[in-house]
Length: 459
Image (cartoon, rainbow, N blue to C red; front, side, top):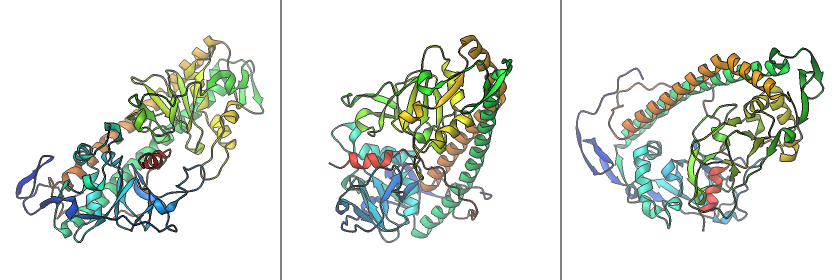
């Protein structure tokens, strides 16, 4: 973005509350003048499409442990390539995108066909801005707030800016280029974080294998590898309780909690913020209750190495059933156990015992039976834990710095997108860089939350 972006030379009042002004030559019109609803069924051979909160519309991968599609495809609606589709219950969160090909979408989606002069890329950028999502939330209707839905009749009257068609395309081209460059930077920083995490894991594994330098003699165990001679080797279920607490089906629909799915958990770190939701609006997988000092370990897509020490949290927290929740027993320091589970040798053990190709998973019983070596003496555990923290302090600081920079980059990116699609900044003369080369897509692990929302919305 070498050309400085400046405001348009002239503005006028937009006439709508959420948008104070627009460039003088832009119109502001109802969505019904921009899109027509497509409600076509009877195309059973087309691929299934889904809307992801992170990546827009994509073809659903039907392999592995993914949620099965409806048995009766006659209820699915056709979306033509280039149509805009959104989840009626999650549009206010940005669950909207453009169909990459002809396909079928759940009855819980609205399919909007762009009319002449409408560039769908421009409008998907607009629909994902915070201001527009607030309007969507306000316009949605339902019996209770957490089940509000944006059906076509509520989407159609919403007001949207309408630049000239060529300008829409120019803005979309600029934002495609700009967001690709930003994503390249984010991917680079996430790779740096991954390398730092691997460095931390190696340090921890070395310290545990040598007993933190406190052991007088080490041995080679056939399963757990190098370990101090006096440490105990036991099954995981002997060190902790596995999935001890489950959220009851009769829980009040108004019960509010933070939901942890695989998309927000990395190896020893959170990669995003858990979503606050009510039980009534939560996916059916939101069942694992979390308590301070619990450890989350993913039992699906185990190659993602999603493990996190849940030291504390200011609100009630629930994890997906795609995780096992480990509650350390008396006699073992929880944080030390968490570090032991994050070592490459234990993660490799989990992966080697997983079943499946596209979505490898490990059963609770098989996970519980895996072996782990730790000292029995809690004083020794404390000394080793202190050594781990001291030796990994600089790595932790570097990870925190990189994550803070990513947060700032995303915040700035979102502000630029909002300014461009609402006409605060003029990109008509801006340079547009063609971004080529490596795939810049983020990991799209979603734990099936989008698909479950689809079926919940059909009644």
